[in-house]
Image (cartoon, rainbow, N blue to C red; front, side, top):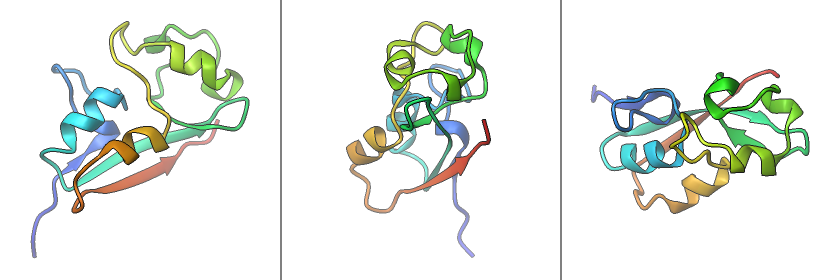
Length: 106
């Protein structure tokens, strides 16, 4: 049986875990077999990859109560870019990489 390396919540970037950020996803795609992302729909129905920490994005509302534009203009720890679910996945160039999406209830 072959072991698989899984990047939880997009993987680690700059020593920060659980960002579900574009940077973490792209970095992890070079070294892991599977990337797990946490997903939730925004107020306007677009599915986003996120961590459970709205405050880390500078948001005062829960993710399901904000718009996609509000989410995309935020930054995790004032640094990392939050992705739409389909955005980073399309950008990956690794045919062997799998993405596991985990829906989280609002």
